[in-house]
Image (cartoon, rainbow, N blue to C red):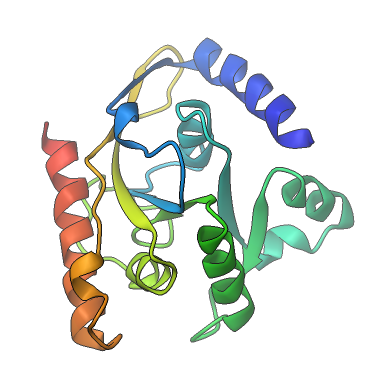
Length: 194
């Protein structure tokens, strides 16, 4: 499998470039479906999350990245799958994410769906809540700080898992998605303030 090799190379590259640190990795459950949801400040963020966690992580990538056959092969073998960000609902990606989580995998996702200059999360898409509620997975918030400039410090802090058992008997309505999404946003911003 390509993932462990790429992860090892990425670990070396990232540590040569930056002073990498992480906190709270013990908050990531060792088994079961988990959504790691963080803020997104740089295209290095998925790499940072991958090299600071022991479990393999699956990431969504914009579908444009998968148009080139070589890139498609590469991304597929490092646990990435495409999502159509222009579509109102990408059912194929939704089903893939939920299937992975139900199978006990870890899904990495970014709250706002794209990179933002400001590290604080001001709003978020409901995808994280949707995936967790439909699969029964827990959500681990992640707060990323730093610039990724040469020899600068970059840090990721993982918060306590957010479990959603209290919603098991509730219908998946917009109010529920909004409530869970707000909880995740608050948790990420709290980590960024620490």
